[in-house]
Length: 207
Image 1: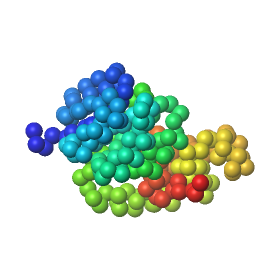
Image 2: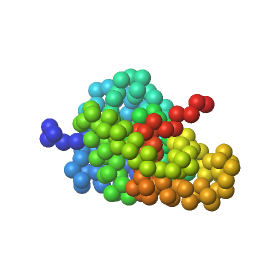
Image 3: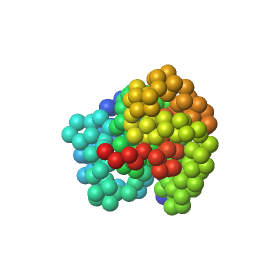
Image 4: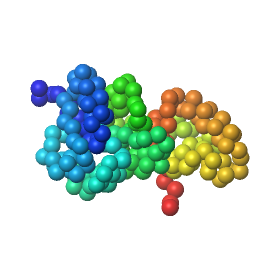
């Protein structure tokens, strides 16, 4: 049991805790659930090192506040953020705060296990960030200048309409560039595209 992987699942929705716990346990993980961020933070310092799956929208403390509190208390466990549909800006903020990945609800089991696998890879390999940065730079270099501008906008949490306004083009044109850059980056969703963008140093526009 000593080499079992521990996942700390923090979500105020009991249905999500049950469904995700079942999927993770059947995949061989040990799962500890918490109904709130406050409950998790009470145990975090003494909790077994593992991966944290953190819902964004919770009462008392939201996911971003919990993530910030983890950093302030030196709880250096990789975080996967759960968001509702359309919470792209929140997901961007979470990933800038160090989250490994984000998943939109409802999520598929394969996406959940993939994110968890990446989180534990980050935990295992201290050189992984360097490798990710190198690979991301190569992928982003293959994009056209306009595709890189669109990706930069996405990495700053901007919706298509705002990116279109900033670039002086139509939303449809942005959608075409977005589809093209995702194909070139060989990613299936926004989460994967943002992970590459952040690794390449994008999304750091000053406020």
